[in-house]
Length: 108
Length: 120
Image (cartoon, rainbow over all chains, first blue to last red; front, side, top):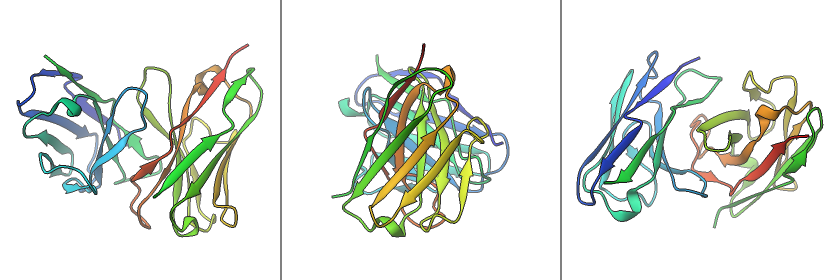
């Protein structure tokens, strides 16, 4: 089973700042990595798929990069609605599909 | 508009059974692979099960294998999860989630979730 490790667990930033979230896989997943945003009481929302492709309707301030075992989600300038928990998910070697433990982006 | 609506959640005793349903609308359900993903209270996301568009290929997480059964009825645009021998650790919100195209294995649409509580 591929284990995804997200860091940091919590990121405290102010609106307008740049957020950089990391996801590391225990073995290569090629570019088969997705990112999701989840707000309290809501279902997750797809942000990035296949490492760097923005999902439909996702603003350009969100970008993804990486391949193999190291991936990054970048939010170039945080908007108030971006404060949430972010999860990465791999499909490089499955079953099982696996998720990272999440990074909470909170208002500083 | 794509919609996924789960139902069937509730309180069940350990060892009991429950069947979740997911009603799909706004897209050609029979063309899409579907999954169940769960989230224990205050915890992260855990993939539970996958079913191919025609229902011929099925996968489960080890944590539910032998206890849960995924199925679908394409004529009724519905996805199901039969959960037997439930344990306290199965307590979670269960989401049905769509994969956007064959082999994509990520999830572009999610339902609102159904809460399953396993407790005596």
